[in-house]
Image (cartoon, rainbow, N blue to C red; front, side, top):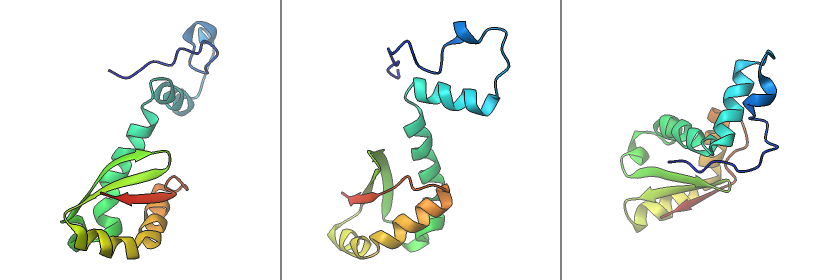
Length: 111
């Protein structure tokens, strides 16, 4: 189960919102952040666009496994693929950030 944010001053506080109109998109973002699910949503987005960004040949031998502190962790099948991907790292980062429409990924670590 996700860890809950213990800070009582967070944006997500229903007792202060009763009777007020709020934008649903903003509220969903607040809930995701409150329950620390916003990073998981970004990971899912990356999984969904990975094949489009890197192509079939690379996606067959690689899998995104996590996003931590703007570092994308990629499992590569072997050292040959890790070497090949390292030479394309900046290109992959640019494509992923373009698909995600933000500068979410700053680094890629191949494991």
